Length: 286
Ligand code: AMP
Ligand code: ZN
Image 1 (cartoon, rainbow, N blue to C red):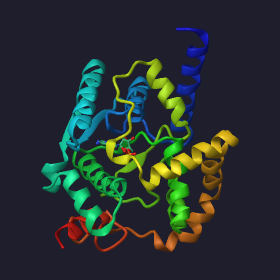
Image 2: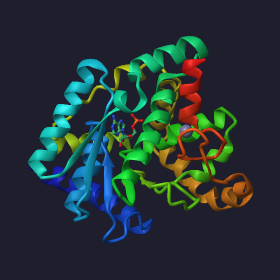
Image 3: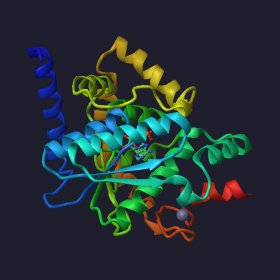
């Protein structure tokens, strides 16, 4: 490998290590589960946590969205067997009783809800429940700087500024034994760098986006941010860093609204009487 590539790899790995250490994402001895989609971001996260000696295990939620899911499942299986990492395979349909495609298409046509929103809410609840049941202390995802700057922009546009109080490489301001803290070791890594790293490392991953994520509000915001980044190459970093700077003030301001209760239907931690996932399933049956 040439010097330029080796230097890039070293800098990339240093940045991830710094994020883990600076924000104390994992304490020694804690059990970490990496939520793996089979894509470049979560595979990179899994590879690095393993390389840094945190002995992670992996979990894939099989969404069974045709060929795309099959390829991702096979890729993560071969990656985990090559690196000797335990993989947990969770079937979405077995837990929720319906396929993701069915839930999404019904909620989309009945209520105009976006695919990524529905998928994200249901996956998050499942990640929390499964990782808690398996006794993990932390759940790591592959969210990168692009994802986070998109989240901030989307929430500001939707008038949901209180969301920004919960931002950061470690989620969960409110400690709760039912809630497994989520960590994002690639928080400050631009997506282009993750892609470059994953390609240089020859990870077995699919680089096309999820077929359901095209023409969504998120992809629209992503394109706007990409064009702003071309004009000013620090756009995404500035958005995330500036909101991170405001975070203590936002936490102070919103602390009264940040109360955890338990969903009266499924028992998962929730900010409302019924959690977002059960709300969606209720809508599906209405
Ligand atoms: P997304 O919601 O697709 O933007 O993915 C965000 C993060 O969630 C990824 O980086 C993964 O860590 C995790 N993730 C996404 N899809 C899955 C899946 N099917 N199974 C497990 N984890 C996933
Ligand atoms: Zn619920």
